[in-house]
Amino acid sequence: METILLLYAGIGLLLILVAIPLIRKKIKPNHLYGFRVPQTLNDPEVWYATNAYAGKRMVAAGICTALAAIGFYYVPGITVDTYAWACLVVFALVFGMGMVQSWRYMNTLGR
Image (cartoon, rainbow, N blue to C red; front, side):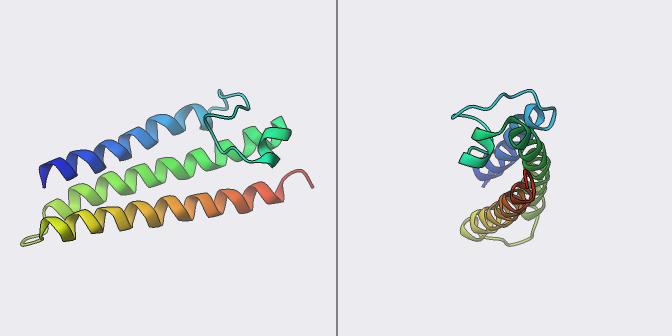
């Protein structure tokens, strides 16, 4: 179970580290890194605003994922399978909600 703890805590930290340049608007439009859809790639203003917004949601997802991994680790009697699934569900829900929110935010821009 320690391996899964390290994996999800590491994923949380990685999400936070990857999000910081996006929040600070340091990443130019590109096809490799960021919220890459036609709307953002075709308009730098939409790119920077959407990626800053999405980056904040990535930080939230990273924090929630790491805290869930640590918190679930200390649940008495939790099985490895249940622990792994619980961590995955928290990550998927929080990250997924953040991306849906980012998509909706992006659609409010450039009108």
